[in-house]
Amino acid sequence: MGAATVTARLARWDGGRFIPWAEGDPRHRWQLSQLTVRRARLAGEAPGPSTSVLEAVRATMPDRGKHCVIVPLEQRDGVWLGRAVTERNQEVRLNYDTRFGLQYLAGDA
Image 1 (cartoon, rainbow, N blue to C red):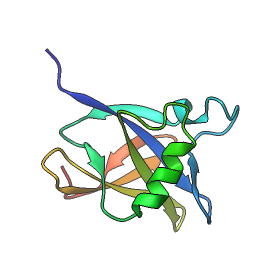
Image 2: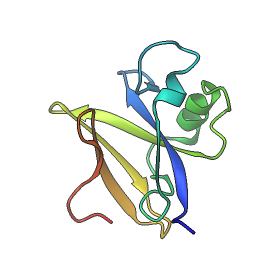
Image 3: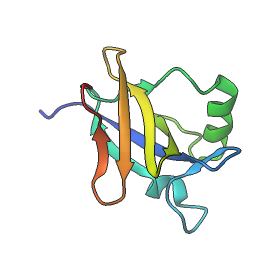
């Protein structure tokens, strides 16, 4: 039996709200913005965005964000950075790059 996994959906900050990472057909943008990761390394949203912000993001998803972890990403100095928590509830810092995918930053699980 393999390791437990979770669906992570990448949400990019556009200056006023979080939107799906992927561009294209609005009906499929959230599906195209998701990836599967090991639950041990990423299990939930990090403290930070208010509940109302996350609820607003989930409301834009066809499935209302059931059974997924939203990973908010903000661009800093040309790099897309985010945070989440592991299944042990430890904060993990992330970087997303279109060439290299999701990366856990040094010192994180």
